[in-house]
Structures are given as C-alpha cells and as structure tokens.
Amino acid sequence: MARNIFNQPPKDDQQAAAPSPAPAKPAKLSGSVGGLRDSLREITANSIRDIDPAQIDMDGLRDRLVLEDSSIDELAESIRKHGQQVPIMVRPSNQPDRYRIVYGRRRLAAIRKVGGAVKAIVRTLDDDASLIAQGQENNLRLDPSFIEKSLFIKEMQEAGYKPGVIQDALGLTRQGVSNHRVVIEQLPAQLIHLIGPAHGIGRRQWGDLAAFSEKANLVEIAGETIATLPGDTPSSEKFNAVYAACSSKVRGAAKSTSRGTTTVVNDENGSYVGTLAIDDKAIAVKVARKDNPEFSQWFEKRAEATLKQLFEEWRNEHGTGS
Image 1 (cartoon, one colour):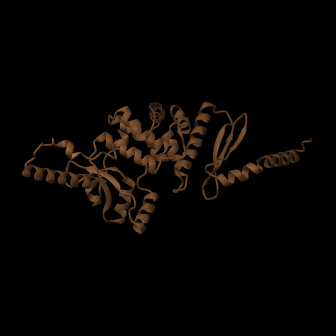
Image 2 (tube, one colour):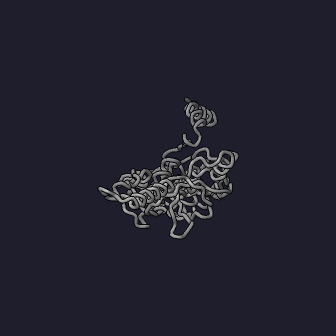
Image 3 (cartoon, rainbow, N blue to C red):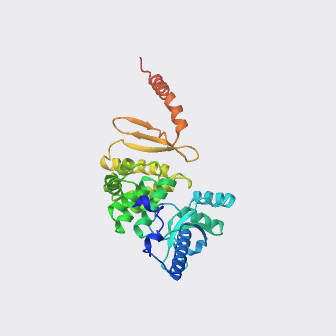
C-alpha cells in the first residue's frame, strides 16, 4: 500500500464506459466532455496549489517532539530568501475550503512566520494512507530520533492503527516496533519532554535510563539537573546530564555508605565535557566522542602520559619509593 500512495494510476476512461458499435453523436460528445472533466480533476488533484495557511488544520498525530525551535526560524529565513522549494501535502477536510495536514508541519510553521501562501499538494487519502505518507516522508527528509519514533508508535497504537500500517509508516519490522514500545512504556511523558528528542541517543541508552524509574523519581531529578544547564544546551547533552544524575542518585540510594558518585563535568561556559565516575572499585573518566570529537582525539593521545604524570606527582608528594 505504501508504494502506491504517491503514484496512483489515472482512471482509464475508455475502460470506464463500455464501447458502442455505432455511438450516436450526442453520446460521443457527452463522453468527450466527461473524459475532459475527469482529466481536469486528475490534473488538479496532482498539481501544486497555493493555499492560505489559515485554511490548513494542524491535526493528526505528532511525529516531532519540538515544532517551535530555532530550526523553524532558520527554515523560515531560508524560505524568505529563496522561496518554498518543497511543497507540503494536505488532504481535504470535511469542512468546505479547509484542509488537513498530511506532512510538512515544519514547513507550514515556517511559512506562517514568513507570511503568504503555502505551496501544497492536495490528495484525497484515508487515515491509513495519510499516516503512511506522513511517516515515510519524515523518515526521508529528517530522520526522527529513537524517542520521537517511540512516541509516534505509542500514539498510533492508542489511536487504533493496525500493526501493518504502523510498520509501513516508519519502515520498521514488528520486532522494531516492539523494541520502541517496550522502552516508551517505562518512561514518564514529562521526562521525555524535559529532555527533548535527543538525536543520537539510542534504544540501549534510553532503556538504561528507564531502568532507573523504579528506584528514583526521574522527572524530579531531570527537572533539577536541566535547570542548572544553559538554555541552549543540546537535547542529547541534557540526556547525558540527566542520566548521570539519575545514575548517581540510584547508586547512592542502593549503598549509602559507598563512595560511588557520578559527576557531570562542564567547562566555564557550562557546556558538557564528560563524566567522572568514582566508586569503591575504580575511578573512571568518560569523554563522549560524539559530543566532543576533537577533544576526544586530543585526550586519547595524552591520557596514558597524563595518568603516569599524576602517579609520579602522587609518589613524590608521599615520598613513596620506586
């Protein structure tokens, strides 16, 4: 079904009406007019129209955690300079002269900031076809994060969509859908919205955070942790900070006499640098390569020498012989 959404074959007018061995002239004229009418309808259905954004309703299931953010402003500025390069898709509403969004919510939000009409493809789709079109187009244009896909799956299931439709919408297997759902069921919705989409954070990391939910108030810890971060902190760094704080809280509750702590290390501007984990067995410094790739390379080259230097300083201070 998903492969035929955007390329539905035109109606065959010659097959629609049975041929007559000797058609009368009025019948032939009527058939020509009817064929022309159908052709015009088909052309109109597949053409790009200019529509007033006020006529378009932002209904349907949300597939993004963040719709109003800096990226919308950037997209609006690009459209202001270069025009709308890619049309959105809408489908007719039950109300006259109104439409329902299928995909292109970010583009529609940006054009509402810029002003003017939005270029849109108008297609008549049922709910299943509309959902599949929405999911497939978003996967191609801007890959949703793991947690965004998980929320989308949860909303689709709660709305009563069949498993096959959900799988087609996101291009996932049945097991893939199950993997997303298992994690999302363990996480408070408020926690997810505090952290955001967290691109680059996968199933295992979200699953590890979800595992803390039975031993700590994740929403409370997340709120306190994120409040200490700069306002422009990327969502993935918020996740790292929240995870470290939750891990520290859980370990502290499990063994109050333990020296186990996990500290988030930030620079003077408050940007995430890494984490320092200390317990009775080891001291570990963790620098995430995806957050600071250049610093990670620099640190890797010097880590061994730096550790030896610190050991020599400790030995000299304590007068320990070789």
